[in-house]
Amino acid sequence: MHERLLQQLLFIKEIDKIKSIIRKSQHFSDENYENDAEHSWHISMMALILSEYSNVKIDILKVIKMLLIHDIVEIDAGDVYVYDKTSFDCENEHKAAERIFGMLPDDQSKEFLNLWLEFEERSTPEARFSNAIDRLQPVMQNIDHDCKTWKSGLTNHEKVINMNEKIGDGSKALWDYIKKEIDDAFRTIDIQQENK
Image (cartoon, rainbow, N blue to C red; front, top):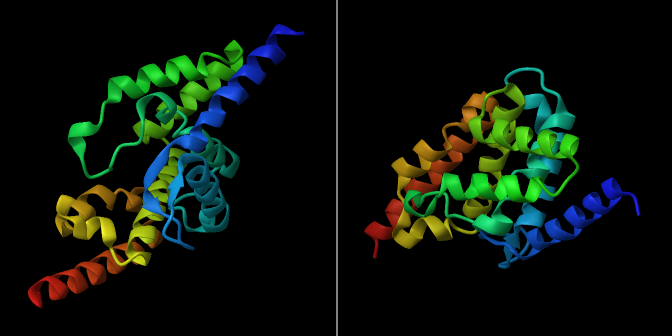
């Protein structure tokens, strides 16, 4: 078998593991928690649908590539609760990216690693829009589920705003929309807590 094809097929088998990485966000449609593969597919679809709201013109194919590969590192590094900075290990994710993308032929390995780094560094309009979509989806899911994870006490209004205001770097329109939703959600949370 051709060496290049063998490398690609081994990579394809390896990334199947992403289906087993369970996230902290629930599906819109039920109480089940989504896995990384579901998340990557869903935000890729969101990017296709919402790309007109990018602050600037973007290469949508590049955005979709970033969204499909950005969480592959979690096969080794695991999923981290976005509001818990103590459990985040940038070095561990970088090692995971090098190992997993390193399974591919050199040209694809470099392309995927560079796309992953670009996404992480938010260094281009595509990376900023990709990050905006990646942050938008779990916020919407949490609000849709009565702010369950926010009510757990692990975060507060200020942390949620600070963590997600970067959505505006990729799409001011999407940030304006979701900031109002966040503010409304926390007003409801505050009222519920006062009435306990």
